[in-house]
Image 1: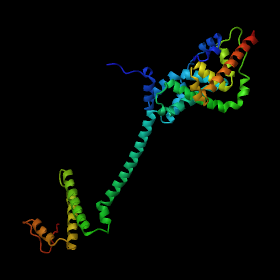
Image 2 (image 1 turned 60 degrees about the horizontal axis):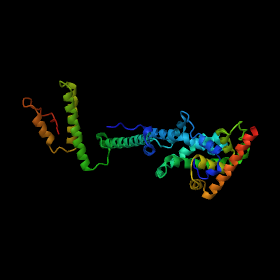
Image 3 (image 1 turned 180 degrees about the vertical axis):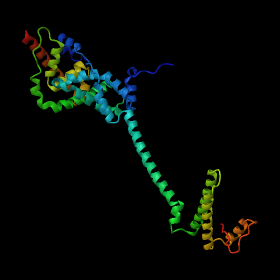
Length: 172
Length: 183
């Protein structure tokens, strides 16, 4: 108690003031209401962390989705099928397309050979037909500069000369 | 190597820093340390409106937490918190003022036979006009100076002193009337 002007108090008043309780017990759970309010206002770490985590997760999901879409679009636009379907290609792009198609054929044949213990006739037939078809197409387009014929001669077995009437197998 | 201090062992300053860093337990410790005193003070300040004390305590803590970044530690935390509680109570009393007369009629009850008791004093305090009650509680119970009370209430220190004098006279009268009425 502040004793300024205490002379106005008689002893009885002083005793009463001094005897007044200074504290009141708080009930269990009493802080919960204000803690909940403070949590809503973002005072506590868990809340801040959870909110930050949610924002980061949402941002990551958006970035991932954009990346996936962009990657998918890029992959589609550069696939062999897509490039073959496109008509607006430059000469350099068409050369590149030829190289990629040839490489794809070689990789497919190699993968098939690696995946099987023995070579079966159907696979050989498919591979041969594709190769032959491609060679004919190249020859028809005059893109082989006589190479197809020279290749056929090299590949022709020596013991089995090619009949004169038969067209040489054209390779590229 | 000494063990780290438990929250209830930490001083207010350390708890405040932890709370501002998002530590809920630090806040609970501060609350449990200071609310018993704060609530008692606000109950007395509210007088006939003491049933509103839970809301005023909550409002006080919220205001304190929101303004805690501005607490510089110049005054003790309990003093700073009480100041906020006083302002919150005055605002609350201002909102409640229109029903004061009606409520006050219910408050003073006959005092018990014999010398006046603490309960009699509490009732007499509750029956005082708001301004007088606030001044006498802050000065005679909480130990504020007239300068501090003046700053809290926006009045001059001399006005606070005069108000205290009138409040004490009213208290003496109320206590003596109560005792003589009973005897």
